[in-house]
Length: 405
Image (tube, rainbow, N blue to C red):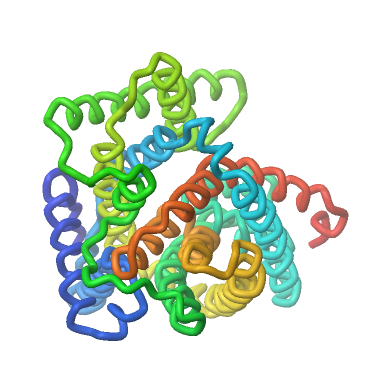
């Protein structure tokens, strides 16, 4: 028996899952202490319940993911609307350092994945799906490259990529907070703050601009919704045009690019979009996207390949944790901002940009805002990473050993 959940029902469940994660995190000190994103907690519990229903009552619950995909486009549109060219100048040295570090991390991920694939006796091409294709790239990149790989003869590449992206999503949401917490405690970086209600990027913007994070008027909220809708729709039209010309890009990338064009054009015209309304839309779309992504996981489908996947995933977790602590934290200044950036880069490297932002939100909601982290990590993760990742993947594919097997 199958049951499909969609429409308003999936929104209701996603919000309930978010509140469930909030409740569980408050009741289990470990989760609260190590800043595990509430959407990860609630979504994972929901997916386990769905799995239990599947095995216990032979009922398969399917989720209509169209709204989830729309939320992803909305989230990346807000990232694009945050990416003023003037901010690239403000990022300066920190932005360049983090971009170089991210590029090195992508190479390490793919090298690790390829070596482990060869150790398992599999085609080295599968190693890329256990590397940056699925982890830093996420589900969209895994699906896109999976189709290309299957045409080249790698059977079930798309399914393998989705499996790694799914487990990476979980891993990225689990390790980012604890790693940052350890750095904050070990180096005594914790800010002396009484509250834990700061809302991530919105608080960061308010602090950076020395303005209170007040609620935006209805005109600003509606204007923001209109601009986001334009980003999504025009991005889709651009994507269709590029596809007709033989160029394939993920939908979130074109939506983000449209957002970048809009925010810089309006800036030249001296028209400013309300950053508080934009950041609130970003936070809502991010949290609901993560909740829907995790609660809709069909864990029983992934059970057959869980052994090799977990081995590769554990190796990648070790690689990214060591790299984040010994390289990223040190080169980003060994301060509080650096620890928040570590939370972001670990989530970004294991579960794509939304997980990195969620990790940083979890840390900053507890210890206070980090304008520097919320400036450089989204710019690197959404603005540059996919382009660099595509270059790294193509470089690996051109290597002689990739023709083996």
